[in-house]
Image (cartoon, rainbow, N blue to C red; front, top):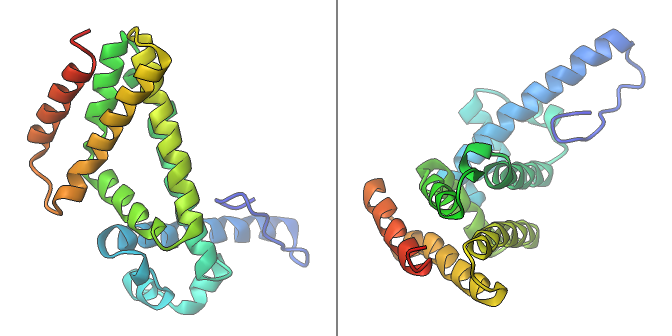
Length: 205
């Protein structure tokens, strides 16, 4: 099983050698994936090309096909990585999901100002405008994030419909800063604005 859950076929290779080759393929796939995520984040999906990545890595196009069947498989790997990173951030960070509901909201809110991940998120969203697979992943992530925020508003004592409405406002506001300006305000400013908005949305609970 490789990094992305796909079984590589080494039917004519001795078991010991097969294991070494599989690990080598996984390591190669990870390098290509990391480079692709970096290019996507900084330059957009249209720049995620095998030739450009090969130059970036100091490798060859041939080595790419050792790790992936084609560019589409690499793009699918990026989407899988993006979705998994989001699930980890939303569901597998116990320190940010402990304490009172208001503390949970604030901690979850504060963690969303990670500039590198916001740039990655924005790049995938722009990609989703033209790619159905990317759009499906973004839709799932949006549902996951909004469900978690809604549950926290319910925990604060709001009825389901009201909690959902307030969660939607909070989430749209969190995404909206980037849509207003390419150059984001300082992180301290964004944190302050978000905390003020949360205070309004939670009625000071």
